Image 1 (cartoon, helix red, strand yellow):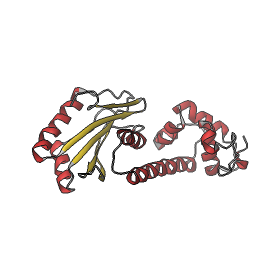
Image 2: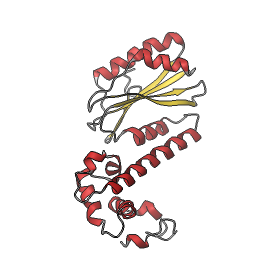
Image 3: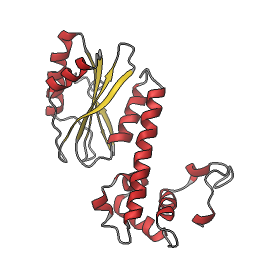
Image 4: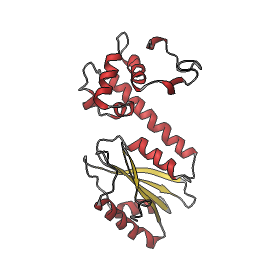
Length: 223
């Protein structure tokens, strides 16, 4: 593929009208790198990045420190990848807000996987909803280590009261790739429910996302 000649807006490039969606992961990376590292053959860089991280999404989500480990990687290429990551998050957040109220559980899961599944540290966030299940706020409440994130039940409810939320969805990621809830995940969720219920506040779910999938404590009948 000649990157310089690819026009992603053209209806017939590539593959009979499929446009950018028809590009393989390494071809997408070539386009990203071509804009950041002009006048260089970026195919090797794209393939080396794919070999190290496994997919386009994993490359985009990788930390700058890990990206620097790829031979030939430049600061401009890393900056371009981080721009792509930020653009995806902003687009997804905007798309979710336009589809509110959050009537589809699958939409919530898709959104959470985009913004959290490829994080390298556990991150705990809360979606605060009003009585029509419209999103009031989406806030990160804690960032931890590779296998633990701080969760403070009273702080979650305090913030919900500040926002006049009537329902919340708890979300965190498992960087290990296994979304199976831990006993601690269940315990802290029950603690939050115990504080929320007397206040008339619903805890719709606690969703765990990872590279390999997701788990819902509600669907697993753990809450």
